[in-house]
Length: 195
View 1 (cartoon, rainbow, N blue to C red):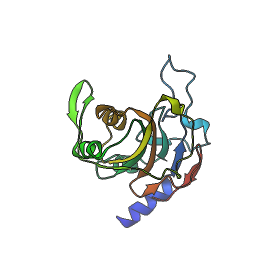
View 2: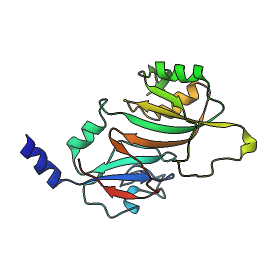
View 3: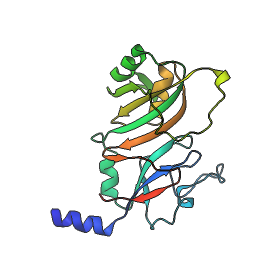
View 4: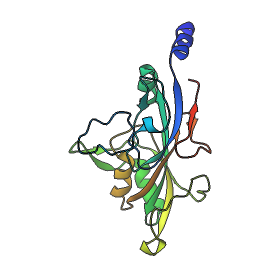
């Protein structure tokens, strides 16, 4: 088993990437209507067969793992691995809203109502670790930041969760996947990692 893991590590590539805002989490664009979209392959000369582990939508940014190892991808996207997001929302976060998020909220998934699993949520007072990017002018209202840590990954789940509690997401940055952290990476930066 240990030998097989070493062989697997030697035969595969693993990277962490700060996916910038405006990029799709894919290497090939199969859509005819979205030909001009920015793809991950434009950021680096990745090995053939490199794939994104999970997704961040075009308007989301932050930590994205890349690999040529399908088993690693399946493990990381499983519910055993936490994913932490720092989210700028439109409005003021209250303790009641944090409690509501932590207990799970009903969102729409593939046209059906789905109650999210309990998660960790907290108000973020210090956002100095988040690279500044203009989102909107202050005159359009108060914004707040929160941290949400989930173990599932439904389509646009975090955005749907904050909208459900009346705080639409303005900016979403994934800062952690399991033991892998965004740290002080810059948008577009790629770092090889060990599995």
